Image (cartoon, rainbow, N blue to C red; front, top):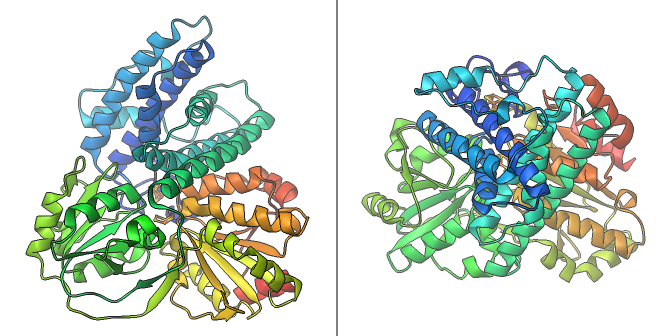
Length: 539
Ligand code: SF4
Ligand code: SF3
């Protein structure tokens, strides 16, 4: 195995024996074979589309296949082997749709067949890893940046699809970019162009998902979220999928079961169409990396609908469920929309007693923030707000991530912090007060709500008649998995400069590619201390 797609990769260079995330070598090799198969599908689907032919089943399959390989989604060798077999059938379908091709057919798009056993398939995958020694390392680096960006937005496209939204433009680009992975004639310029285009398509996908969310559940409104517990049986929902949460809320109504959010589900509380359920009781626990510590104490059923699942301890494994593309070997998987088994498990659990706790605020999507735009603009003009920070992104286990807590704590009182994604758990319980009624900490939502943050920044730039780079706004980002890569590409596509990124820089970026990013975008690693960075930014 060799995998270097996430921030916690071994020694900062790559996992080559077992994943730090818990991914077994065989699973990693199977994921590589799946990606290889998806490139082959992309090759043919891209040709077919140029001739005016497409197939929605292929389009959707590729998105789901890519999302399957995102960090902390699918740890099941049997599940991935099944998807590989389906992928080969999809490739043949795409090839038939393309109706012939006169050029050279790359190996990934040839008529290769998967081995009969999982071990055979893993051995095939081991030969198709992400490091391609036959090409220049910088080209390979940008190829992998594109691939990881595709994986990232595939997650968002999948959530949008579950709510009935999809985009031909997203599908067409995905196939084009997968095909490009097999094209040895593309030079660095062409690949960098594709990487920025990946960022544009991610923006489009996040917009699609935002529309799907707000059309289904209304625009988020500022909402206090209980961190304590309510008497009753309990189910904990972790992940990003709002539709799955809604279905569970419907199926548990009037049953004396309370639903708690975990991690990236926290912003669900801000949506009128979800907060209307009285038994959406609160948020339990911190970000994903704390689950092994927090889940044993949860007295009910727990269900993951997307990343980030970790190896479950025996103390809660029999109360744990997966849904959608998430799979862990020997953990019960709910296929479809019937959650009765989860409900039964919750009913058998002890449940919580009444124990009210702290309340935190969520629900500051672009609609809510722009509703008070006049107030915000006046506060900037009067000098009451000196600077905005977007402190957002993924959380993770590294100790260096304390930087983000320090940053929020030490940001001067005349600054406002916008935050999103699970990195917020580092500081969302701090009472940062307000500036003339505007809370100093605004939770914009999930990682995909980076779309909302972009809308806020663009609206502010419009109000001040300047570019986003000229706003008193600094972006302090934390990354962990591939959705963060997609979002970073979006920010680069928008021409946003001076981003500070941490806790460490990605292993898949070569020194030359990093130089390119520094020269063109002044992207920089977070500094030694939050205090020093705050001083450098604010002067
Ligand atoms: Fe290692 Fe991250 Fe890959 Fe897991 S996803 S194997 S931790 S690089
Ligand atoms: Fe977190 Fe896994 Fe990235 Fe959606 S839940 S941000 S890490």
